[in-house]
Structures are given as C-alpha cells and as structure tokens.
Image 1: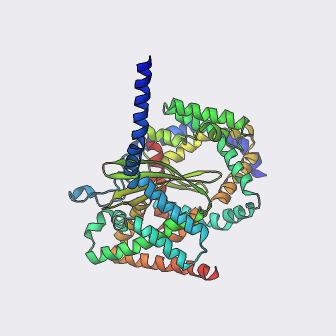
Image 2 (image 1 turned 135 degrees about the horizontal axis):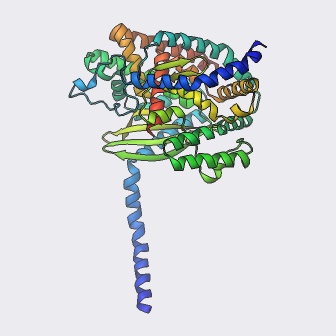
Image 3 (image 1 turned 180 degrees about the horizontal axis):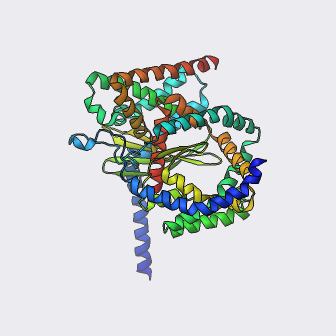
Length: 212
Length: 260
C-alpha cells in the first residue's frame, strides 16, 4: 500500500513540477499566431476606437490603419474581379485594388459601426491546409449575426481575405455585380463608376464629421 | 368590405387549387431548374494557372434570372414601399422600448417553431426536430408565449433555421429562377412555391381570421424593420448595382442554409 502511495505521490509531484514548464511553452505556441487571437485583437481594437473616440477624421484614419494592416486587399480585389482579373492591365489592376479597398473599407466599417454597442461573441477557429476561418457572432437582444473571417498566413501573421456575414461572402458578392458592369461598360466604365460611388460616399460622410 | 365578402370564396378556391398548382409548379422547377445556367460568366476552369480562392463558397454557380426586367420593376416598387411607407412607420414604432420590441420579435419567431420542426423532420434531422419542438413547448410556457427564450438561455437549445424551401433544396431541387416578390422581396421559384404549404404550419393561420392575420403580419414586419440597423439603406448607398448585390446575397445565404 505504502509503496503504491509513494509511487503515486511521487508521480504527482513530478507532474506538478513539470507542468509549469510545459504549459507556457504550449500556450505560447498555440496562441502566438492563432488566427482567433489575431481577429479578436483587431475587432476589439476597432470597437474600442468606436466606443471611446468621438466621430472624427482622426478616428476614421486610425480605424483604417487597423483594417489595412490585417486585410489582404489585393487578394480580395482579385476575388471580386474573378476571371476578369487576368485580362486587366497592370495599371488597371492597381487602380482597381486601390478603389476596391476603399469601398470595401466603407462597407465593413459601416456594418461594424451599426453594431458598436453590442457584444461580440467569439466562436471556434478552424485551421485547415494553410487557411483559417474564425467565427464571430454579434449578439443583439433579438438576433445573433454570424460573421466569419477567412484568413491566409503571411510571413508573420494571418491576413483576412474574406468576410462572410450570414453565409454571404462579401468578396463573392461583389463579383456578380462587377461582372455585369464589366460586360456592358468594360474596365474603364467600372473604374469610373467606382470612383463616382466613392466620391458620393465621402461627400455623404463629410457633413456628419463637421457636425460632431 | 369587398374583400370581406370575397374572402371565404377565395379561400375555398385556393384550398382546391393549391395541390394542383403546387404539383405543376414543382414539376416545372424540376424540369427547368437544371437547364438554365448562370448568365454567361467567363469560366475560370479554362485557365490552369487561375486558382480561385472564393470558388468553394456555396452558391458559386449563380442563378438564372430570365425575368430580370420584371424583377427589377418589382424591386423598384418594393424600394419605394420601403422608403416611403414601411421605414417611416417602423421609425415611429421605435417609441416602443427596445426590450419590448425584441420580445415581440421573439414571439413571432416562436410561432415559426412548428415550421422549423417539420422541416427538420422532413430532412431526417430527428435530433434538430426534437430541439425545435422542445423550444416551442418551453418558450411558449416558461418563456411567456415566446417573449423570452429560456430554451436557449438556460439549456443552450439554439434555433434550427430550416424551412420548406431548404427541404426541397436538400432533396436536390434547384432554384428554378430568381424572383422578386411584391412586398416579400427576394425569393426563387422553389422558395416561393414553398411559401404556400408553409402558410399551413403557422399556428395563427388556424386561429385568426384574415383581417387579424393581416394586422399581425404587418406588425411583425414593422417590428422587424424597427429593430434592423439600416442594412438595406447601407446596401443601396454603397453598392454600384444593389439589385445584383441583393440577388447574390440571397442566393449565397440560401445555398449556405441548404448546405448545413
């Protein structure tokens, strides 16, 4: 009996002693580059800005910086053009990426802004064949809105290449409307319409900013 | 007054014709659904080097929209209805405190539990069907006719979002084509047809007369819009072609729901 007890307590002691050594190493490895943690950090930082700073161009710029660092806009722009990406010239591609990222930013920000005062629940993350998906939910008093982020690894961190709101991929959603405009008006027509829309959106948001 | 005297007759007529109408429309969906294809997008598979990261999203195949000009007209009409009638009324409805409106939304949603339970069962999702049934019983009693959702907050029994359109989809019925219904908005031939038998799963259908039904349905819609955070307005403001954006969003959302 005694030997058994000694053996057990000895084993327990060893485990307890080794545990602190093993735990941080493992925790560090899994959390350091975890897509979930990265998404959580970014979304929390954006919400923090929205909740604490007054509405101003400075705040908008700060949030833009946060988004730009974490989103792979070039890949998203490619996805939005779909097969038409390859037939565009390098210059057109460049113009499209710049316009598209600004439009997408407006859309994403607008949606997040509408739910500033709700809580965000973080669901599970799935990492498969070098791609990751992180589930988040905006919890309002009557509904839960699922928003997933799809990410690809960069050199150091994960970058978002798509945002899926209620099963609807934002990038994919642009594709059919852009394809339609491309067919009827060509690349130049599409770029012109995008420029116009962006000017319209900025015009609309400006008076509100002066007001605040 | 005219509608009152017409109602029983119209109802009787509907009852008699619905099975026939359903059958013929269903066969139409089945026959035609697969034939129509997406409106002429360039095929990515022609290009070996082209890797499409977004191709694995459900609903990638697109949807046939042969009635686009009619759909766009109805879309325009719905837009005017929303902007000049529904939204102002909903804004006025916001005098009712938010917690009450959320509770009301949950009550209306509770009435859809029978539909969800049946739809689960028709797809042999027996466990999910049981969850919905439990939700109905618990929330109708302890949840004060669905005003609260104790099934979720106490026992983590979450809503199983299923309907008859998804049942048809699960059995391989295609969309047929895209439809914009007056007032109701985005739909497809398949999901639109599914709305008819779906009517009979609504407990209110068996208890209320048509006037009371109209009033409750209107309240439901107004209440829903009053809780929404300008989703529709932001799409109209931000998108180059809102009609296409909403069509594709509907398609992706439905495909995702059928897939689960």
